[in-house]
Length: 256
Length: 285
Image 1 (tube, each protein chain N blue to C red):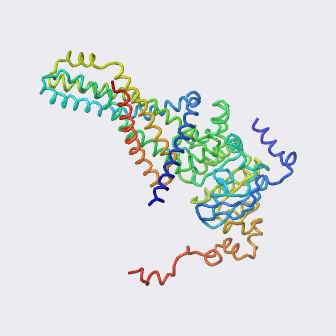
Image 2 (image 1 turned 90 degrees about the vertical axis):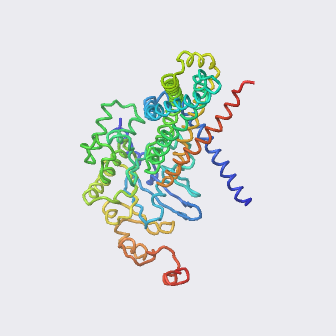
Image 3 (image 1 turned 30 degrees about the horizontal axis):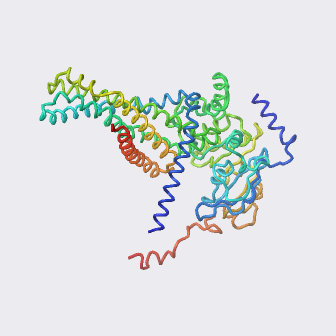
């Protein structure tokens, strides 16, 4: 029993140490890559960002609509249905926008990154690059990591905007809330601090989701089973890490 | 420029290298987990020759190539390239050294997101400032040499196994390396592709003055193409010499391997409990 705990502990420290060194290398290489391999980074922003747009917009629209429905159903009891805009705005911009986008990103783009890098490893493409004196971290990993980090805040912004439009559609057009009250109250209640919180979360979550995706891919066991396990781990670990970090950032932003 | 480099590479042995061996492996030991793969391996790769490394499956032939190129590190022993111990190189020096190597992987290892042309152009785009026009010339020349100039615009997924390996060969030689390494180049090829590859290996070695290391267990092909062969068994060199010498060797192991005999020092069956007992004994119930 003690021996098993010890082995687990050593494994944890080893993995965490490896992840830290990996992150340091990514950050060291990032500025050079951004300048010298700008086109590769743009291609990866397209892969991680533009190709995720449809799922992000569909989900954003429906989440906004559900918020309006739930908000309306509960707020009418207090005669405060005009506050549906505030309710949806707070929920989307501070919480649901960043969190759901990060979870969708892990499922859509994160898994694609992990399996792509894992399969490149399994088919010796990364070894071939090393043999051609090309650092795979610089050529393959860093552009994909940067692509995710850059795309995420934009995806969150789009999710939140489409969500607000969904809430407007349901709240104003279907449930008959006054359009002026819907937007005016939201504008009065939400301030820069709230938007900043959302933006900060989107940046941090983008960082976490992209890092986990490339790390798992790069360290996957180069077999079919190994790559599939790594892909699953990407989603699970990203989800856990995002929700824990979300709690911490929310706590840090609470007004005293 | 390239031409000059090639000429200087050809002159190098006579001018500045007192040693005939471009690669020397001394007392190499390497284990995976508890299984010892090499137990004091000694191999010399001669400059300008085709050297073959043979051995039954699982003797660590591919592992040896990964050790030579330092994708793996030995437990003990030395690997010297032009007299320099590669274990002492830092990452930058190692990448400089690797620019002198070209390697053909077992499955080709083409980059699947790039076309055939871009795959072959990849090392040039990464390491040189050549103009697009010049890169196009060089790449088409190399693709022509492997007979696949017409496939330049195809994607790797559209190629057959043999074609992929020929493209990988074009990519391995596009930077005019000093040392070409082939990992099982003949596996799974049809007779025509096999003949093409065998001729290419020999022709490139002689025409470009490079040194080649070839890992394989295709005895017939090795015999036609190699100058010197090493037979590895049980983590050590069991025999070495020219193909003729190996064919005439009296050792049981060498004869079993060279003539493909099922019975001999190398057992066909992996270590297992008694056959009858396993089928009829208590475990069977």
